[in-house]
Length: 364
Image (cartoon, rainbow, N blue to C red; front, side, top):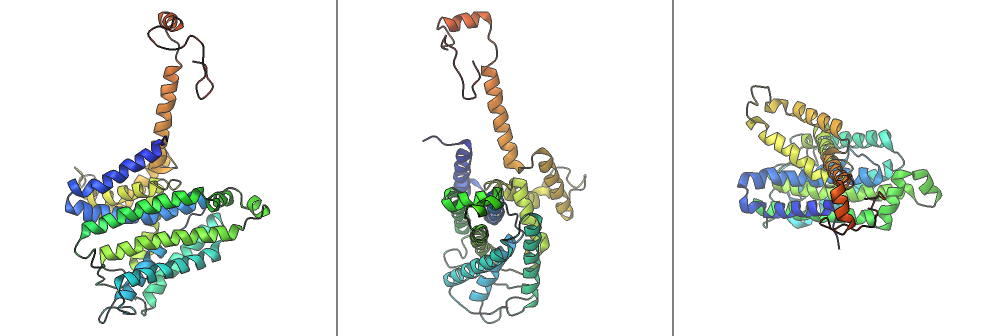
């Protein structure tokens, strides 16, 4: 069975990620790439909702944060902030994902009848409410946040295992979300994206499809949030404030908000710029300092948008299409008389003397 260039590129990327600990430094693997994969997993939910549901959500980092806060409350013990339930880490994971998915289902149901800029504004309101809720309700956190959260024993003291967990879960999420898009539910969701009025007239429950898609995206974002608190060991409301919320949207936009794989590509660019921008030659001379990171990221987003509204993946797709057209035009170019005679005689070029049609119908 033939594979598309997209599938081949994704498979090669997955192989590189799996083999990375064999040749990458400990810092690059356990810090840069682990953070990249986790942010990519969270940003993929924005791409999923936008590409297949037509919903650009600013609430995905809130789901990411809710899962982290629930893990912190569940595993925390005496001396830490929050509810201090002292549960087993794996029980805490189930608890966190159930709560996150339930909240996503509720918020999705509330916003399912809106679309476009109104949906965007409503999800931004969710993000703001979440920030103040966890900041002001000290039962769950407070502005100081929850610290001292250790991962399960399987990952405690083994950052490479946590990296592999993030990679495997990202692969599962990518394959799963693409599979969902091919199911009857996914096809109906894309119909809702394109023409909700017609889909409603055909008997589809538009609001229910949007709600279930939002809940699924919330679950995946919650998985990323669990990985994040295991990796970071702490969480506070500032980490889900409006600034980081916009950062997650920017990650999706840089990679290509209409492409699932663009989420991880955008996260890679974002994290690399955040960590290595100061090390660029002459960076200080031209004013590229860490304090101006957001300005640089803004310029990167502007440049990507000017080149391609579909982000970096869109640029790659355009380059591939341009090369394909170039090859076809080269094949269809007029040949010298000698070459035409050789072709008509079944000569060196090996082409048939009978004109044939290529895939686009042009005679060659």
